[in-house]
Length: 155
Length: 288
Image (cartoon, rainbow over all chains, first blue to last red):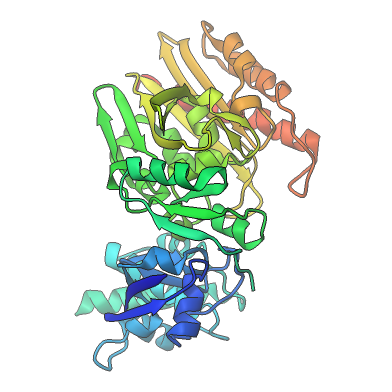
């Protein structure tokens, strides 16, 4: 089945099987391996991407459902060679250890700050509550998102 | 790697088109919206539909509005949208309290109200909330539309009255001035299915229970309801002893099963305690 999907601003037209999951389309067809593939059961959240600006678990979305829609992956966060503030926050505050959950955390963090520029700790924890950090580094993830919020408020 | 078995894929352009596609592909076709129940089941090969009919594009099913004295919730309304809606929170706090503990925010961005009800999981939260408020389900089929009381909608685990060739269109809930509602759930960890959960809907008239609805999930309550407890409560003054007795009757009417979430006596205890707490909070909110 032919699909036309805009990923990080670029349009891709491909023939795919209807059963191809979005996470595998991104990783295997488009070689955008920043999006990770984890539990396969919509629990862990490492596969989170934005679909029309809203974070979704891409292991539970069919590629054909993204036909005609816009997908943003972690590769799309950087703009003109500049890291997004949430990426910078994760660097500054040691928001990642092994890095497996990081792309999904970043996509949800970006969405949170777009809707709520000044989230408190509880709001950040709730936003990422569907995503698991297997290093249990939540303290620093929360600090990283706060760092990004403060940076964006200061600009 | 979990991959669904092969299937045909169609995108519905309207409700009528979806019904045509259901007829064309027959009883082994399934509608898909959020897909957060169906796709995991397909990945595990617990479900192997011949065809998926994607209804995500049907704006006509995404309505969420108050019409006269009725709250109307389109089948395609996402959990996140129900949770974010101020009118829903004002009239029916039970829905917001249930939604807040359904899965997680990212899943709620995708999963739909109609999908949750049609999945008919015996531990599903909204089924209990809708049972408590005595919603009506509007179902479309080749012969037109019919309305079914939500307490007749579920006929068993993973089974509803929505027949092959039919689809759920919307839920309708009557708004009664002065009513209060609440939802209480115990889960093993954030975002999990309930060990047990209870919802209560209450309208007091001078302290006397004029209307009451109780919904229970994950504890084997038939149609997610507690009719004997409701029959006991109606017409009584809403004091602690009365609410406690109503909750006890509700717990007695359950048929929980032991599983990894807990033994039968614990779940029955929770059913009673959570019903009491939900009733108490609904009573506090009633009349306000």
